Image (cartoon, rainbow, N blue to C red; front, side, top):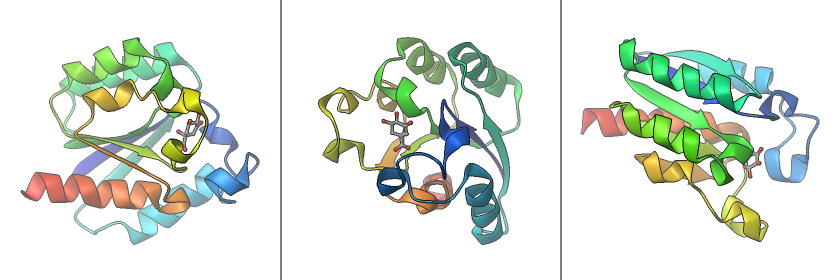
Length: 144
Ligand code: DQA
């Protein structure tokens, strides 16, 4: 099975930002860690952008792809982007929204989770394990 992992703005700066919330791993280190521990039946493609437009276009491409699940951390766009939520509502594969931090224990403005309205599963607080658990959640959903 092939899953796509999309990371939104500022996640390319992991390792340098607020380690109390996000842990000390860089995105590259999380990628290596997740790929190494991922179930052997799954292959992962990773993609990151700081641009809302590019993220929307990447989601649109999923309509024509052979990915079986999308794991997405829309980062700050989770709280603001009706456009990404609408794009996610177009695609038919399971969507797992992950956050490294527990957004519910943080500021008031992080309590609105627009993109999560289009997700099958939402999880947060696992730091470097966020994506690995996201992959396993997608697998569990697909296997029924
Ligand atoms: C985040 C949480 C968001 O509120 C924040 O803007 C991020 C990262 C997380 O993974 O915990 O950039 O999505």
